[in-house]
Image (spheres, rainbow, N blue to C red):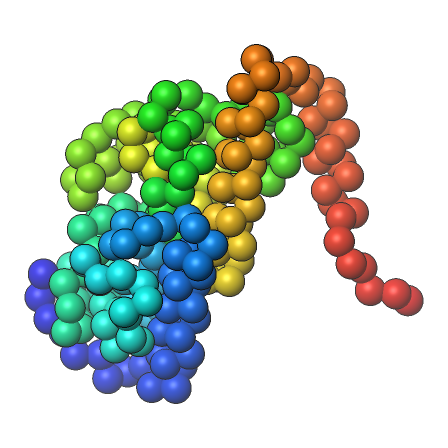
Length: 225
């Protein structure tokens, strides 16, 4: 990678972006999604993205430790970027609607990922992540282009996927939404794990899922006229 200057960005905006990503990454540890130096996170910024550095626990990170990369291979920062920078780079490049990427080795998602199976529509909240299941990307060595390729494939029309024998990836419009989705996804994985302890859970039909999708369009707070 080539170190580049980055003078065209407003310092205040960048500080806010760094603070937002750092808060989300720390929350991953606080909520038990990551332990030690596992996991990483990125946030789209300018013509590139900010990413957490390699090998530093979240609680020891400062804003200046986050590394900025652009899509042409340039970087700016005092730290080495996460070993999974290719994964974040390729997702953000391929998915312009995505603003932040969270990768974690969370307990329940990782346990399920070690079986290499998709999460079926055992619960209607599976739809929260883009479709009637949450796929599991095929295994590839961490930090490699092969892993990035298989995850990108699994994420087609989805905002989350498992990574076989590895962990999970969750996407969001920004850092707060991405970390909220990651916490929600780990909770869904725990529900599936517990349900499987009792046997094979009932899977919702396409008709039942279609009704849920219709309901989702009216979910949440709406403005009063």
